[in-house]
Image (cartoon, rainbow, N blue to C red; front, side, top):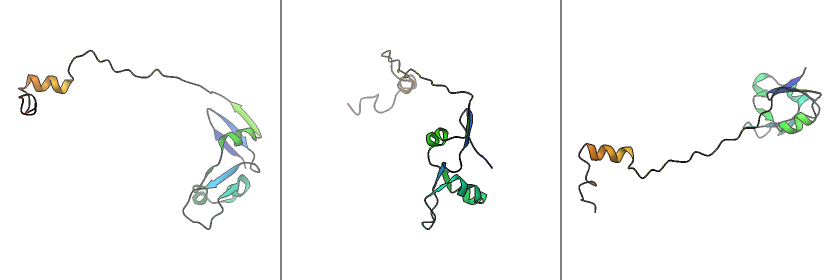
Length: 106
């Protein structure tokens, strides 16, 4: 049996060094188990554990194939403030305004 971890590629995790952390509510369960123990669990029990560290898993992998690794950046969105009133204010003026527009709260 193999443990395969995908990340726009894959690695064959070493069951001896790959660790899983228990995230369930049963305090009597072992908090950390290796891949050999995890492979012996039934499907319901496996769902109660998560991979402890993807970095350690890749570092200790038996086989690795990097298919795609991308780093992306985005410019922050800057609001365009041209000094014009917002849409709500424009509609209030067009429709005759509200109490604020008629001076009761000045």
